[in-house]
Length: 492
Image 1 (cartoon, rainbow, N blue to C red):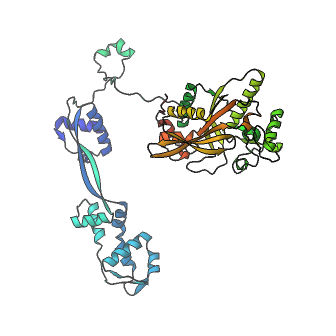
Image 2: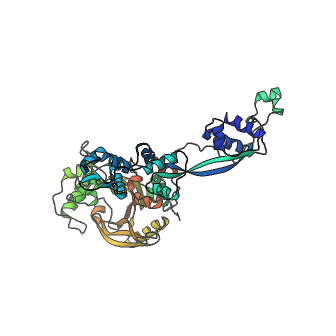
Image 3: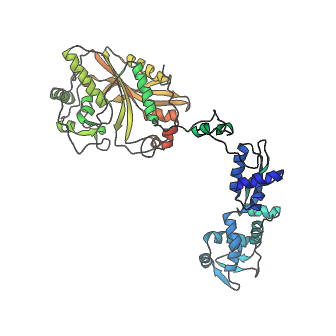
């Protein structure tokens, strides 16, 4: 209906000067008129020019006062003509917002005497604010001072009205020509194709984006880091054992049974199955002996090692539990055949009973790398770390001595953060202790260097995420998963 009205009007007139007035004159909705103008303009039936007008309108609060009166007059009328009323009683008669504004404005106008008792100072007042608001509703413009006063009280606001002026375009016609979008069999058989106007093809138009799956930022960073390990000739360890025994998670790593990390406040222990049923008994005996009385140049811890503690099942607290299994298997293979140097890595989920905050979760991902070979030293470890982290784009490294139960010497790894302009801890490292390696069956000339870091920290830095709960867990915004950019870690 709006299209016929516009094209029909322009057949006999040069211009529609105001689409808003045109809509009123023809009993049309202005939004419908605007939509038709945009469509006709796109097909060059008409030429359209924007029109913008700013009009003064009442806010929601202003409309309320136009109906019921200004707060100061409402308060004034609630005060008795003779005598006074207590502030508490008056407050009960009025809306809290009306009472607060009314007290201020009525006192400012010197209409009432304020105090514990409120009384009138004049007998009659005019509600000038209401009169101004009603005039604005009728389309009248207030004076400059009145306008500023109402605007300061947030009773009025400027509203921008948008419309169009319209003239005939280069392809104008009194009625829109219907164009065909497809050449059909019927057109060819009937010969209609000779007279049909076909819609022009827009070869630059983009089709709808195809629905597809989206990789999580953690998976992107994880895959890039895996590629770095592979380029360095590392072999990935199987990490599908979320449930582990305390023996492989702690005891095999020469971590004492009274260590704080083995407390239920830090570790998730299983109720069912509560204990493991299978451990290599010869190896268990050697681990027990080195804990209790030492060996291999160590005095041990000097306590009574308990098998029931080692049998407890838990959710693994680090992927080093997998490393201990893999190293034990490697040592047994060396006993039967010959020793083979190995480079192992793993990236998978671990669990710790920690308080959840913006930087900590009860589950996270650990990256771990280790090298097992003869004659390895701390210098080899530093060299491998510099190679690994340089491929992550971290060239400036420094190391600080640290303590770990199963590595000696141990080092914390720091990298200089160009954005923060300071050194940031990025991981931990060390050489596995003889008390861990010799019971497995390795000879004295075999050493293992290892390091570890979390997957979440570099991912948060790469994607500018400040709260770990926005990256991992049930509160993650799916929009982040769909729209996150590629992870560009420099592989060298």
